[in-house]
Length: 255
Ligand SMILES: [Zn+2]
Ligand SMILES: [Zn+2]
Image (cartoon, rainbow, N blue to C red; front, side, top):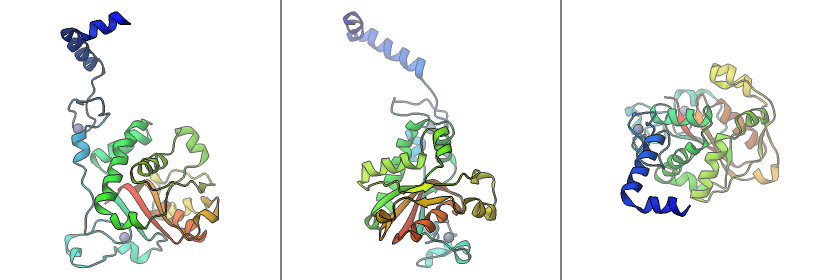
């Protein structure tokens, strides 16, 4: 051991050793293909993460859908979908559009199961909440991740929404509770249309302990908002269990 240390304290050897390590472990950013420059960077470089643009107004006050510029003159604009659909959540907000580095990051987390990437993704959520949703975080009693069915949890090994909640809890001091459960197995929503999604997800969730939910303002957290069928069903169940208000936060949403 001592000879190893002596070897590394001699600068030319040390530099050679570092270069060698960089050479062996070097990898490219999945998005821009530039070499990752530090050990903190994994899969996607800081530069690509910093280019993810937050959704800013005008967007639907209910579901967060991006609206055309002319809506900017309306104080709390509502999109066509939210006029016709029953939304149980008070508001849904997403950090950015599901594309580019954000889409890649979510894929790396969910499908490649590289949990380390939840940190820069969690960081996006924290920055977004601090910079864009101060009012929302001031109202929240606690966070609830959209739960996975036990079968899916066991095959993936983690719940991505829960990892993101834990990151927010750590950095914004908002407690996480796990009283929402997925009681019915459902096929992935990904390949279904809107009405099929609604049918598929109905009755999939249950509140474990109504006492902790009753009268509370909840922030429901998930990775992607597509049609909103999943978060709407979770919200319906939470409201039925006595929650005062349910807001939704996702990393990404569709256009
Ligand atoms: Zn990059
Ligand atoms: Zn809407």
